[in-house]
Image (cartoon, rainbow, N blue to C red; front, top):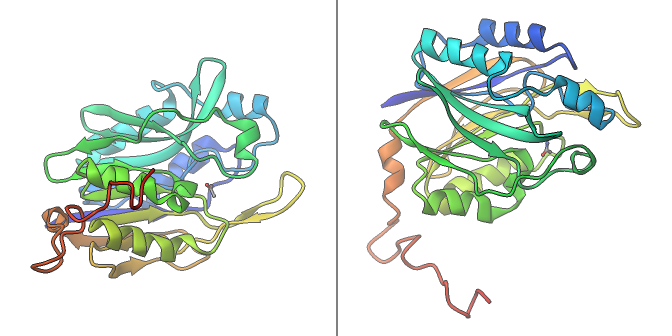
Amino acid sequence: MITVAALQTLPEFGKTEHNLKGIAQLFPQKADLVVLPELFNTGYQFLEKKELFDLAEAEDGPTIQFLQKLAIEHQAAIVAGLPLRKGDEVTNSAILVDASGLRARYDKLHLFYRENELFLKGNVAPPVIDLGFAKIGLMICFDWIFPEVSRSLALRGADIIAHPANLVLPFCQDAMITRSLENHLFTITANRVGSENRWKETLSFTGKSQISSWNGNRLVQAGSSQEMLITAMIEPMEAREKKINTYNDLFAMRHKDPILCD
Ligand code: ACM
């Protein structure tokens, strides 16, 4: 069994140092995998590209260095969402860091709403990282509405999907139960709470971070307004069995032929 966790946070826009301190305070003493929200270090509602570029960091910047220090201190793997520079542009990214350093970077493929005006869209499939005790797939927030993202991670061997989020719609938490069920794997959604009204409208974030099992059980869920840590003990190897009875293997019986696919 391993311990997995999600941190539900309330970042203050633009106050990276303050937001990192908050993570250090909430961080679990002992966990194998800890997932933080999307854009956890900066906040969400950027006004324009220059502001975003100024707050974004390089892969050797202070935020990833801070996460690696935490990973060493707690012997944990950490998945976190943050804006990362790519040339003159910025991607909305998720990274996996452990005691050995930066293991993977994923640039969000499906940008939500005004993110399309601000960020450079990713163009590479999300990674699956083998940590030995489990294979971890990465996706970010709005990727939830495209079932092919979680399917692709599952087909490439993910036991757990780590899902940093800044959710404003109320549907994702239930949809992730389905993503778990249809792929027979664990999902960890780390969302934020609070609201931002820096631009023309107020965005309110829905919290309810959750950890879901391969059988659709919601193992634990946070509330909708407080910062908090949620944890669960899971056996990742349970996700490797895709047979749900003698007749039905969820992966073997998929139609990849013209009946369903063109
Ligand atoms: C989202 O993708 N941040 C909703």
